[in-house]
Amino acid sequence: MGEVVVIGLGPGNSEWITPEASEELARATDVVGYSTYVKRVPEIPGQRRHLSDNKVEAVRAAMALDMARRGSRVAVVSSGDPGVFAMAAAVLETADDDQWRDVPVRIVPGMTAAQAVASRVGAPLGHDFGMVSLSDRLKPWDVVVKRVRALAGADMAFAVYNPASKSRRWQVGALRDIVLEFQKPDTPVIVARAVGSAGESVTVTTLAELDPGVVDMRTMLIVGASTTHVYDGPDGRRVFTARHYEAPATGDRGVTQDQVLKDD
Image 1 (cartoon, rainbow, N blue to C red):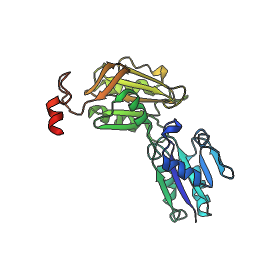
Image 2: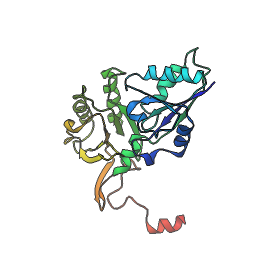
Image 3: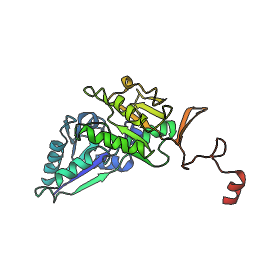
Image 4: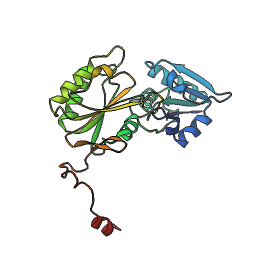
């Protein structure tokens, strides 16, 4: 009996692949995944690579489990963290069957796309936050709407995965309109594309100025809350969501020198 190891590669930059992930990839006899992600894995002589389309998660999972049952050490790769809108759930859902339950499955975490995007501008997810996928391929659109309303109505910043694709061009505008029912037009929004790659682009805008036309399948959005603030720093615009729900006045958010000395 072999095993399946579901591995997060991080959002794109090779420096964001963890040492644990690299070790597991080096030990694998087979690498399985969406072609874009498998191509990010360094080739090792003798290691078999199985590339597939991004819409066949269950088929991919079954293939990995079958190879593991026959003795292979299979690495199933995902971008970001495999447990966040990625292959970990697909593999475990498939493994929850009499024919697969005896196959060992391990999950190796990775940096999420939301973490990477947030780091580029500061700490927009610095307080309570949520994550939602805007894709309606695996769930009805009315469920997406319900969850976006819940997040915006709860006044939490949230990251938006899968905001658009070649066939889904209207949903970002719908998202903006829903959030505007609960938040002010000047609520900060981060529009980040291809973070961690040579084509990286990160823009800080507002709900009112959010342009759905610039959003594609490689884009992530982070929508702020009423406690999300923006200021111009020496290295560009900085965004944070205050740790205090009622944020102190500007200039009074940090600790004083006396407090620092007391803590020491």
